[in-house]
Amino acid sequence: MFICVDGADGVGKSSVVKLLTSQLNDEGISASKTKEPYGPIRDFFLNNDDLEIYSELLLLVASRIENLEKVVKPAISRGEVVICDRYIFSTIVYQTLSVVNSDTLSKIISIHKLFNILKPDLNFILSLNPEEAVRRISARGGDVNRFDDGDLEYHRNIHEAFINEAKNPHIIEAGNVIIDCNHKSVEEIVAEIKVYLKRQITFRDIKAEVDRMPVDVSVLL
Image 1 (cartoon, rainbow, N blue to C red):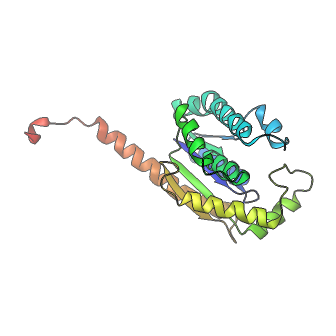
Image 2 (spheres, helix red, strand yellow; image 1 turned 180 degrees about the vertical axis):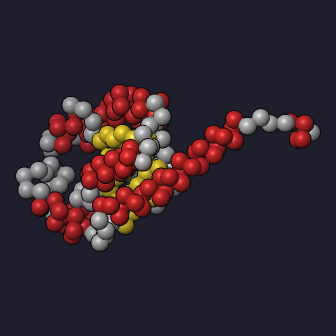
Image 3 (cartoon, rainbow, N blue to C red; image 1 turned 180 degrees about the horizontal axis):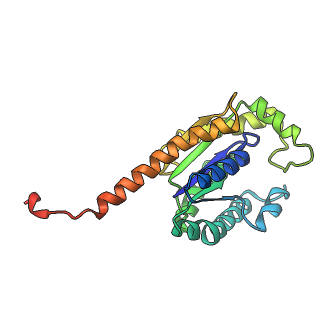
């Protein structure tokens, strides 16, 4: 199973992914985590602010393919639940807000279809008041990148875009779940995610059992 945790900067994605992975393993559900951008592309992408918009997109897709082929797909084949910190939603939100061009979204979707990019089983979009997100980012001190370094209006636009895209059924053919993180601890957020996740795991296991059942076709004649 492949699930993604996404949302604006400062919402606590990394903390949620870390705790969720740890708790699932403690409960006997084999889980591993990864993050995007992946690999050596990550530092170059996050700290280079003069890239052209489509150069950024191609870098992100290249990083995504590396992550899928080297980390995600092998782990899924071993029967693990793979939890990814950022995925396609981040690409859609940040790249479409970076340029006023109606073709940008269609190009993002087209290039993912071209390379048959794996779709997640579940997308969790973390929602947090932008003022609180900016406060958290400021508290990090020097541990920030070019996407963190924006004013409150910028972070409000990012937050709104994530929520709007999560409600768009045509963006990603998967379950999109918005998690309200306001006034909640990391433990409470993870507990909420696990309700949805275990429901999905149960459905998957039941479906697998049904698929393995012998079918008496004579009853259909």
